[in-house]
Amino acid sequence: MKTNSKKNITVETPLMASLHFFFTFSLLLLFAGNTFAQKADLAKTPPMGWNSWNTFATNINEELVIGVVDSMVSMGFRDVGYNYVVIDDGWMLRERDEEGNLVADPEKFPNGIKHLADYVHSKGMKFGIYNCAGTQTCGGYPGGRGHEYQDARLYASWGVDYLKYDWCYHGNLTSDAAYTTMRDALYATGRPILFSICEWGDTEPWFWAGEVGHAWRISGDIYPCYDCEDRHDDGLPTQWSAWGVMKILNMRNNDTLRRYAHAGAWNDFDMMEVGNGMTPAEDRTHFAMWSLLASPLMLGNDVRKTSKETIALLTNKEIIAVNQDALGIQGFKYLQDKNLEIWAKPLQGGAWALCFLNTGNESEKITFNWNSHTIIDKIFNKEISFAKTPCKIRDLCAKKDVGTTKKPLVATIASHDVLMVTLKPLKK
Ligand code: GLA
Image (cartoon, rainbow, N blue to C red; front, side, top):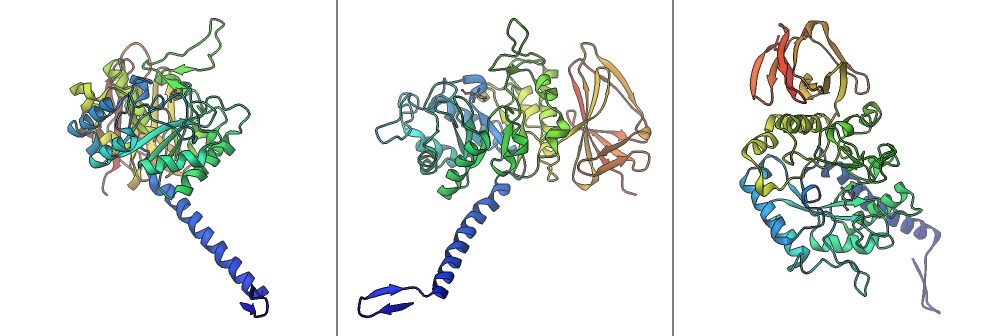
C-alpha cells in the first residue's frame, strides 16, 4: 500500500487490490462453506420430535408445551431420539410491533419464547418454531415475507433450533426463491437452525429443496384416519386437502421422491397421527411406514396423555433404528399382490427392513417363500437374493427373532396391520 504524502491519501496498487479482493472472497467462501457444510450434519438422519399442530392447532401456550416437554422426558421419548419440540401456528400476535418484529402472544406465552426455549434446552432438547413464506401464516398471523432477515435474527436471539416454514398467502412468490431467501437469512445468523419446508409438495420440492432445507412436505395435511381424503361435493380435492395415512403413502411416485432423500434432505410425509384415534393396527402401520420411508418422525399427539401401548410403539427402538439408519435410504414398494403390499428399505451392513402391509378389510394369511425373491433397489444400487444370502429374521413389533429365510414365512396379518421385519445376512 502506498501513501501519497502530499494529500495523505492511501492508494492501493493493483497487486494489493487483487490480494484484498482474494482475501475478502476467501473469507466469504469460508463463511458460506461453513454454514453449508453444517447443513447435512444438522439432519444426518430424519429429524424427530413433537409438533403442536395435529392435536392443538392454534390453541397452544407455555404451560401446555412445558407439560409436553416434561412428558417427553419422563415417558422416554427424548431418550430414544425425539429431541425437537416445535410450536406451530398461533404463537404470535396478529400484528408485528412498530419496529416490524414478531411478538409472541403474551397471554399464551407470558414469559416469552426465549424463556420457553431455555426450558427446552435445560432438558437437553431443541426448540422449534413456525412461520410462513407468505404475507400471513395459514392461521392469519403475520407471515415472514419481506421480514426474513429480521425474523431470522429474532429466532436466533431466542435460541430457536428449528424453523418450519409454510406456504399460505404466497401470492406471486416462486417457492425455491422464497425458501432460499429464508435459508440465507437463517445462515446469516450463524446459528445452526434446521429448516423444514412446508409447501405441501405443490411445486415438487424434491427437485429443488435438497439445497435449501432439511426436509420438505410432500402432501397436504395429514388427518388421523387411515384412508380419508377431503373432497368437495364435486369429488375434487379441496384447496386445503387433508389426507389419511394411506393416501399420503400412495399419492406420489415414491421412486421419483426417494432418489432425492439423503442425509440433510428428507421427504416429509407429515407429522404423525399415532395416538390420535386410529386403531392399534393402523397406528402400527403408520409408524412402521413412516420409519421405512425415512420420513421425519414428529409426534403429533397430546404426549401428556399417551397410553402405555402408544408409548411402547413410538419408543420402539428397533423401528426407530430403521428410520434412523445411517445409509439414509428411503424405502420403496417392492411388490403388491391385491391387498398385500411389501415395502423394503436397504439398511447398513447389507441388512434390509421389510413391511408386509395388509391394506384390506380382512386378515390375510401369507406364505412367503424367500428363496424365490431377489429385491433390487435400482436407484441406490442395492440387491439381495435370499436364495444366495440367507438371513436371520426379526419381528420388530414383537421384538423377537422369528427364524431365517431358509424356510417360508407363514404369518397372519390383521386388517390394516403390518408385519415389520429386519433381515440380517447369516454369517457364513
Ligand atoms: C398448514 C400446514 C400445517 C400447519 C398449518 C398451520 O396447513 O401444512 O402443518 O402448520 O398450516 O396453520
